[in-house]
Amino acid sequence: MERSLVLIKPDAMKRNVSGAIISRFQQRGLKIVGLKLLQMDNALAKRHYAVHEGKPFFQSLVDYITSTPVIAIVFEGENAIDLIRKTMGATDPAKADKGTIRADFGLDIQNNAVHGSDSPENAAKETTLFFRADELHAGY
Image 1 (cartoon, rainbow, N blue to C red):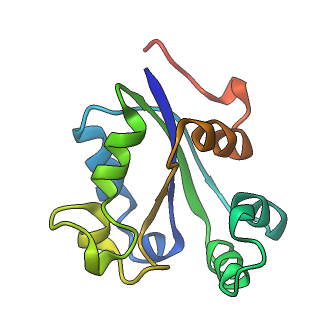
Image 2: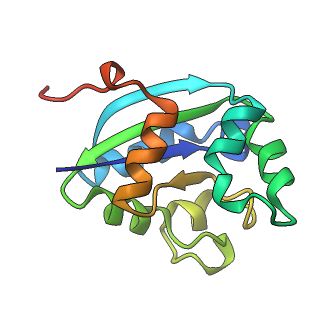
């Protein structure tokens, strides 16, 4: 079993499509083992997007992700990371396959509705940014 972090981003929250997005992942057989609504502060946003620090768009990412509350979810399942990435679609909604979350709910490359970890290492790292070990549940 594999676990991965998903964030439902501000543009999706503003349009009230979080339930539809969560449902897409659950329909693929993924189980929610952690879920919370939170308002990211600048410090957390900068840690989350640290890989982009120094790039021209870094501050706009921080400003965007801190603009409204987001939903952080840890999903668990067989090949969860790959399944989540396929369900989300390409980062740019204009290039995402029809029927993916980003094609259906994304607006542009930044306002693309969801974030999902891209590797087991990043999934572990990102999960610990948003959840303590005792906040994750399994075996139900």
